[in-house]
Image (cartoon, rainbow, N blue to C red; front, side, top):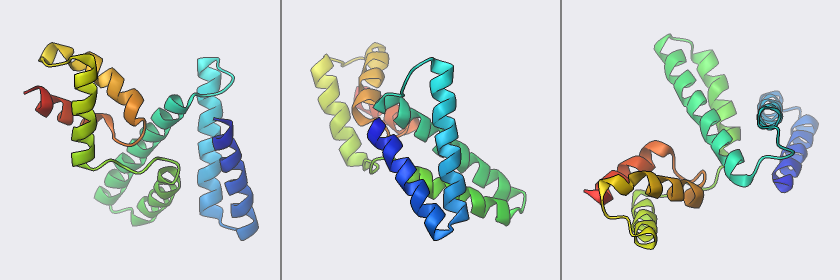
Length: 149
């Protein structure tokens, strides 16, 4: 996790030097969210999985905000949210394709011996640890359901 903190700090310095206010604001917001989450959890540092979960949550919030702003005709605010989303996504791992996700689901199910719908909870928990940030919960859930059917 310290490498992620270092990367954020370095990116903040770069944004300051480049006078990129939008990127700098997004990075400051990201750093503040990390500190807030660590304080709430009482942890010294977030784990890699917790950081990825935080990024996924922030990504989903930005997606929802963009949709609402566009619906309300506020393209200026939607553009700002898109800029923040770009920064957040730069810290997420490359998203898995549907085929890659299906392969991970199959592999994980075989490791756990999951074959029935009642095994969905165990399978989802194991998947969240494996793909941390490379697929959101909705896509994982759909892939698991299609595998178990």
